[in-house]
Length: 116
Image 1 (cartoon, rainbow, N blue to C red):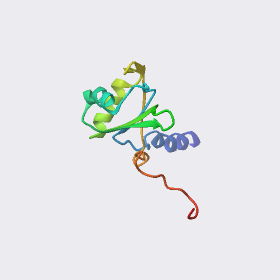
Image 2 (cartoon, rainbow, N blue to C red; image 1 turned 90 degrees about the vertical axis):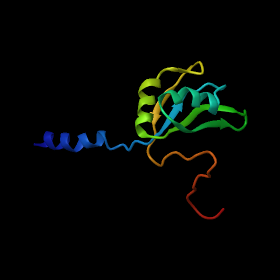
Image 3 (cartoon, rainbow, N blue to C red; image 1 turned 180 degrees about the vertical axis):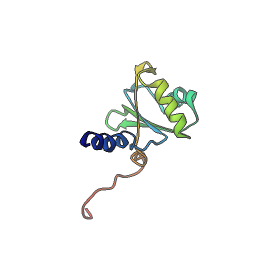
């Protein structure tokens, strides 16, 4: 009985992660741009936005980016096809982002605490 309860309560948790149409891309080349990533990912669907996270001191990409597709299905197709593949000469690792987790670089993060 206990095993049955544990199995039933654990199984739904495997699929509880909400899936968005934005992919987290890790391992991009320092020479990657929004245009080169858009070109690479647009083979799998309509790319709405590419955010390359920049190192402000070195003025080059940090090696990560976010790619937003027009649908979850297109993002899923890119995830299956490009994960572990070469993009701009580097092997990239893709992951899904939780809905609402990605803060575009042009927005300020919200800080807890008083007015400083």
